[in-house]
Amino acid sequence: QVQLVESGGGLVQPGGSLRLSCTASGFPLNVYAIGWFRQAPGKEREGVSCISSSEDSTYYADSVKGRFTISRDDAKNIVYLQMNGLKPEDTAVYYCATSLDSLCVVYPTEPVPLNYDYYGQGTQVTVSS
Image (cartoon, rainbow, N blue to C red; front, side):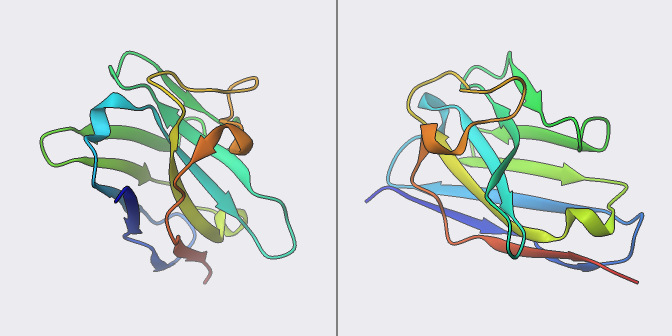
């Protein structure tokens, strides 16, 4: 059974950091590109970042570029999203999902939610003082 589980969310003050994990089971994570997405209350799901299966391509939404870093540990079957310099507008439920193949589907640098599958249940990130 293909499953992704997100973890690592929490409450953090503005300027703080969190590291989210996306753990896969039922399949080897390294055959797919993996995207991170977020959805704030009352807003549509938006793409945050993506990493290709070979790690040679990473993409970031303009809103997180320079603050977030995506990486993968294929030996552990985990993809990470390191989030630094967090802002209140980063508050959302964060999800990971698989691309349809080894490449990220992005426009222009944001992963496109409809082109990803096997979303996990999400992890809440709240940035507030």
